[in-house]
View 1 (cartoon, rainbow, N blue to C red):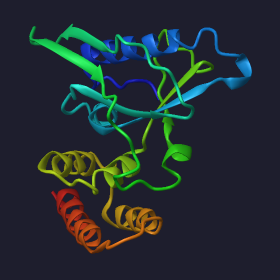
View 2: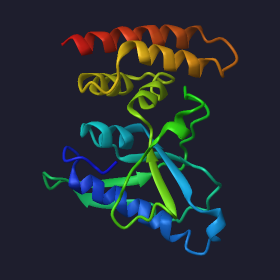
View 3: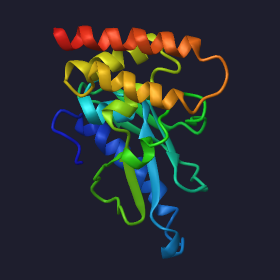
View 4: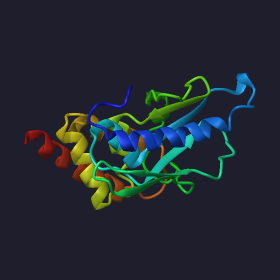
Length: 195
């Protein structure tokens, strides 16, 4: 997918610069080891789907272990002229949150000018998998993000329940809290879709 017209061009340019810096470090990687896939979640993925809030960080994991460059923060000016910073979150990982086992396979390619998908294949979680990924922490921001997806018709209640329960099947331990969160999120999405 290409960044939609509802995305903020300044944010997209900063994101593209971050991806280009990562791609530059792959210049000497043997062709048979490419492409490296970059799976984007969190607020950055949300922005590409909805155009709503911009995140200060990029949450992403890669298909291969990658030696990231030092300079993974990009300063830019937002549409209102305010100084902003976009940085790659080196602490993010997707092993502690709720994530469907097929989320990476089902992710959507993001076409960015100047980033060669044969070298760095930037992908974003589908709206459904993005919503599921937000159920683990389920902060107020996560709830707002899920509602934003639902209001645009990108997530519906029953598919969310099914995908989240499938994701939960891969987890061990006491999942009672997560089951309650799934029920609450499904009700919230159904309410947002009725409006």
